[in-house]
Length: 181
Length: 181
Image (tube, rainbow over the protein chains, first blue to last red):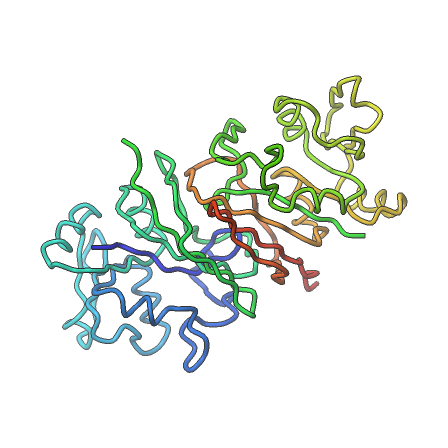
């Protein structure tokens, strides 16, 4: 079972402006018919998506639900208001990464997609993220919601794939090595 | 005249640990006879190097002076103690980026290399950095001295070159577009 993040960031490491705005993402990652930067292939490889409450609320404002029938866990310490139309696939969890991993194992999942800054950071901090695909957008926005957070220990990565797109996006996929204990 | 930065950073955007340590740079960038990640070619293309006092003091601890006869300006609000052996090429400046650029123009330089987090950030913030080459090291160190700082305005970049090395280093070279005023 593999837990992966797939995320776009400004070159200075932000995944959104301070108010959550994504206007600086010049090419939307879900542009219909356009280049999807490997997103569909990645998305098809996972069985479940985990995101924080803020990411969930942001996604709801972006238009139609884009995750289809894929099961989604929304992480929040307090109950999350899930629209009725999504209740068959979207559930609320207040579990820690280690508790979630236990649940994924019980569900016999092969791949889990972890999304959102705080959620990615918590899986990284607990040494539970196996793979990270970051798409660097050629812009500096100067302030915002950071992709990475504090870590108690270094995390060493192995570069699996690196590619550049015509619009200047650079995408690097890394395997995250288990930390030495 | 082009003002460029060429710098290595951890994937989470740090150029050194909080105490300035570079131990996490698994392959030293100046390893004799080894891969130099394009450094020599870049270095030969510039006429002068600008660095902050902290970077200068760090470089002095790393062994023999590696910048040869290339003129170096060390930026500091207060006078910098320059070893006697370096006084023919190394000078102290307390100027702002705009004042430095005026001096570069008067000197008819073709290329200037700006090094060190704070120095790069001040040139970026004043819209005076023309090119940025960042070499992403495949590691998260969790805290340290950041490559990028706050900006009042977005800075848009154009990807000029992107390459991956066998050891997982990813190097991207960007042109920095003049900011809209």
